[in-house]
Each structure stands twice: as C-alpha cells, then as structure tokens.
Image 1 (cartoon, rainbow, N blue to C red):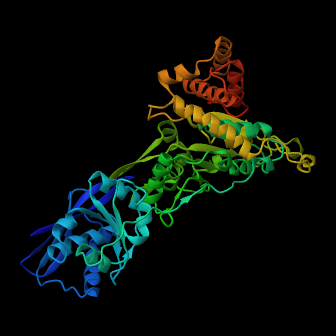
Image 2 (image 1 turned 90 degrees about the vertical axis):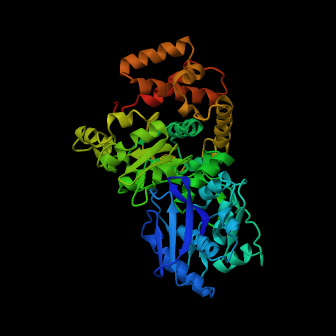
Image 3 (image 1 turned 90 degrees about the horizontal axis):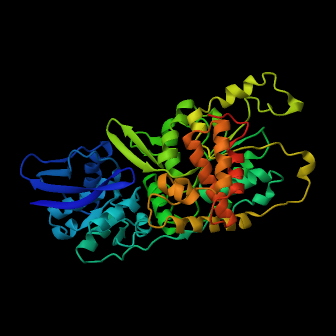
Length: 504
C-alpha cells in the first residue's frame, strides 16, 4: 500500500505542491528518501526514526521508501520532516490514510518528537487553501499561517499531538491569527531644522513612490531626512500586508505569527554583496530590494556601493520584479519599493563648501558621482541638493509641518491614486503609470506642455526622463487637489529633475 501526504516546495514566494508517497515493502530493511532531496531532506529519515522511537513506535524490519513527487523539482529545507512522518504513519496504519491525504504538512522534527517552527508557513497556507486541504504545522507557525482566511490551519506542538488528533483521541483546535502590529510612532519631520525643499521632495516621493536622490556634504541631514520617511507613509493595506508578509515569511522574518502594518524600511550597508541586495545564495532567498517591497530601501553612501550592485538595480526599478537566475533555480520576487539614495558630492564630501575647498575640485566630484551610471541616474525621479545647515539655525524653534500633517496629505493623494487605478492590477500609484494610462492622467495644459518641451530640448531629457517628469507632476497635482496637471506642477517637477547633479 502506498500512503500519501502533501507538503510544499518554495520557489520564491510561490509554494508548489509536493506529494509525499510512502511505501513499506518487503526486502532488506532500510529507509530511503528519493525525489531530488537536498542534504536537510535526506537527513529527515534519521529525525523521523528518532521521533517515532520517542513515541514507542518501532519501524518494521522492511524496506521503507519515500518519494517526493514531482521528482524533478528540487526539495530543500527541514520542513519535509513532518509530511514524511505523516505519510509513514499512514503507511503503518497508525493514522487513517484518507486523513493524511487531505493534509498539507510542514514542520521540522526534533529527536524527542517535538515540532520546531519553519519558514514559509504563510505561502504554504495559501497553497493548501488552493488545493482544498488542511494545513498542519508546528504550533509556533500556526498564528502566521492562520492569516489565510480560506485555509483550515492546525498547529501541533509535537508528533504525539498529531497522532492523537488524527486518531480522534484528542483533536486539536484550529490556529488563530497572530496580532496585527500597528506602525510605531516614527521620528517627526519637524525635528529637521531648515531643509524645506528636501522635506517637500520627501512628501512628493512618499505620495507617488518616486525614487529620490539626495546629495550634500556630511552632516547636512540626508540620513536624518530619510529616517523620517516611514513616519509620513500610510500603513500597509490588508492586501499589501499579506504580500509583504509572504516575502518576510520565506525569509524567516515574521515573529510570533504577527503581521505588521508598518511599511518596510531597509537600509543595507554599502559593503553589502549583490546577493544580499538583489537576492540569491544557496536557496535563492529574497534580497533587500524584495524585503523592501511596498516600503522604502534607503541606500546611504550610494556611490560607495560596488558598481555591479548598483547596476543590478536598473531592471527591478523599472519592472517592480527581480528574477534570480541560478544553475538550479530561476526564482522571481516582487520588489516595488521606494528607493532613497544619499551621497556626498565628492570623496571628501566638501566640494560645495567654500571654507573647506576641495583640492581636487571639480574632478573629485565628477569622478565620485560618475560611479552612478547615466542609466541608473535617469531612474531617479527627484534629485535634490541638501545644503549644510548654519549653526545659528540649529537654535531656532522647530518650524514647518509635522510628520502627522504631511502624512495626512500623502494619504489623501494616495487615496486619489487608488481610485484612479481601480481595476488596473498592474498600477497602484502614479509611479506605475505608463503608455496610454500616463497620457490620460498626466497630460499637462498647453502652458505646461510648452514648458516641458522646452526643458526636454534644452537639457536633453531622455524619453524615460520625460515620462518621469509627467508622473511627478501628476503627483504634485494630486497633493494640490487639482484635477488636471497645470504649468506650476510641471515647473516644480522639472525643478526636481534638473539639478547640478550629473545628467545622463
């Protein structure tokens, strides 16, 4: 008799169904696992054997064969322990075979039979719901998986509890979702003295998800400004929270099954590798750009990142998706994020400071900012110079809008965009608009169109730059509550595009 249970294998955030087949056959006693398992899966037979022994269940002196189907799909991770044990228990007629067949299971077994939480419970629950099966997982993973309303999720603390549940001796209660973590109170934008133009750029970037590059000498407040960006972004919607949590689930970053409504804010160090930024490694795990999905990726000391790392950002910035191609895997992760980059004007940082004249000016600045290629620079919608703040200004009282006030304006502008793109799943914010949709929503009035054409001709805007100016102008109009894009909106958008920063 062949007993069956089900589990999943992860390809990015997608959980592919895997059938676990177990047969107890006559022949030389042994325990084998086939179906392209990695080392962790192959070692499952020892953990399963010890866990069953802890339950006083002796394996028969026969050949036990476990096949993971489809056999050509790579199987990685320790979460195959529980489904293998479940199929074996059904083959030994200790639990009903039909109950095992109706279950998708994942979980790691310790030698005493207790279940250890594993990553990926959330996408596994979605896969189980799609197959109309119950999900069985470690109790610590249950609150995370239970966020999928369509799935029936059972969490168990040990293999003994699993056996008692399936034999009807002591059924387990369904798992309940973990807590929703509300965004914490962020740092207030009002704490930043001066820098009104930079604050305005932050507001526009937050409203339309427009990529922002800040250049200025050390200590001018670039990092301080970026740290206050999460405080003006609206909380994640339910759909966005689920999207983001699926990526974090695969990466093992969800704590106690809770889902946060705070938008991700990732700030990798400039020594980070390409695999750390874009994703990869042995199991093609998500990188920083995917972990920042629906949130912010802040890259300080932007020109200091290795050139190959910076160049890999070009395609994800355009498509909102990154494809990790390896010899044994091609994995796709979503990565619609707001990129905020900060850079000094030159290597020493004092190119624009007359009191600290740079001895290599202007070549120092050209060489340093030249590390950012023209195509990558072209993908920044907003480029601003952040001047140093005078010491006398530091003692002045706080001025300008608070983060709460700016957040209110950003939320209103985003609500307008949600209504505008309703029914268009590929577009959510103005930064996503393209083609006919962009022409429909962002064509300026005659005066604004004339200005944009003159600027494009005078400064040699690329087609990408031209369209990005239109998107920014549309966002500025949304912040103003205007139905159409007018000349002042185009003028302000152009002012953030044409700076002394290097043009492509």
